[in-house]
Image 1: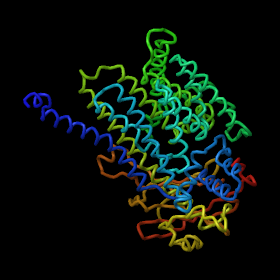
Image 2 (image 1 turned 180 degrees about the vertical axis):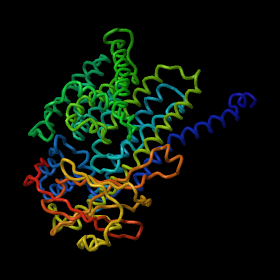
Image 3 (image 1 turned 90 degrees about the horizontal axis):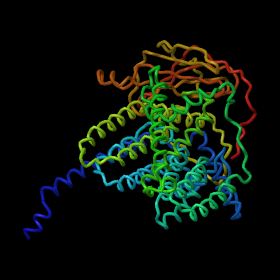
Image 4 (image 1 turned 90 degrees about the vertical axis):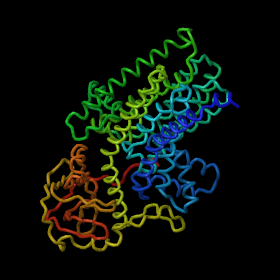
Length: 565
């Protein structure tokens, strides 16, 4: 009895359990906050490519034979084949009775938990204190991801492909035979979730060769070649990117570094925003490249010193995938401008690169002697999480207001090209503005004149409107919208709200700046002369105002938008 008491010290056991409960709470906290934002601000309103999922369901339902029905899952969408998105869309359609885009968002965002679990499995092999894992969910689950987070199709495709590729690299890095067979299944999913999935195949072959698993590399290579052949069978190359003319190699290199450093894009109002991401992106690239070179040249294949362990192979493979993706995206998207490479939907790659680098560094350190280092690391990651959420919350609200305008405009002009007498593809949600549609459609000149000053400036493709004085509305469903009205059509357009700097917020306690801005692009409207008004939604109270101004749209428009879906 005395021996057992010495073996299990109640005080040490209690201390161990309390510490792990605290670490577990800190791991769970950013995840809970992230999914709270998703639950609170997501809307069941499709955006852009979301409508392609309606086309898929209609195509699937109207196709009766088995093989043609199966082919609808693999039909090309732009440069991608998105079978993963389509499978879950169909499941949601069958369960819900129509496409519920919020459910698709949840599916996509849950794959991030899968990514976190893979990182945890790698971290677990390093036998560090759980405290050192806390920075990873703090970096991963934050609102820099807002565009994918609140966009049904994008969440499934852009987060789903990350899960399958990271999972494939994890499986290939393991010597377990069962993992190799599961990896072949994952190879199928990476091919038919997003177009960049096939870039993982040469990476996996490198990892297998570094392990001297030549037979497995032949099998995997054969499967990969078959999947690539099927992917490009009857493939049509889309041509929708702007020209690369005038873009030099220097601009591409700086864009590449900016893309890699976009996780540090927190200086949103600073003139040095892009330079900051370029410098830190270059630093990330240099460190990751040096680590990758070290791992390759110390592998059993080249140096014949030792076999790389699974964490090292995983880190090497992840570096190759993330940096390779940065090269491809930079080359194909640099023509949209420097800021385009900092867009929210691409930042997941920079975030994962930072996390992978963190894992690589702590894997080479003996942290048992410097456990105190966990506390500044947790504090730094917590500050990063707070800053990222603070700076990007306004984007969540502005995106939500954009979706609200989509929903209202469809009701103001109900064109349903995919309508079917017996298939309910999507049920529009009930919006606060629905009870005011008739008021919004009445002639704007009948509204009282807006007394606040609104500055108007011409831009290349429309007008830019700005107000600096109007007190910002604070409730979730509040908003300032622009009415754009011709004799035949009424549009409701969102304004963009602006947040105060964090320092100003700490001084005043006010998140929102006064005023609003809006860009009215000519290509969003039919040709004609439009009178301008403002619609203010505050709780249950709504009111329209006349701006005593107009917008004239007279541009050449294509007869139809060409798609391959």
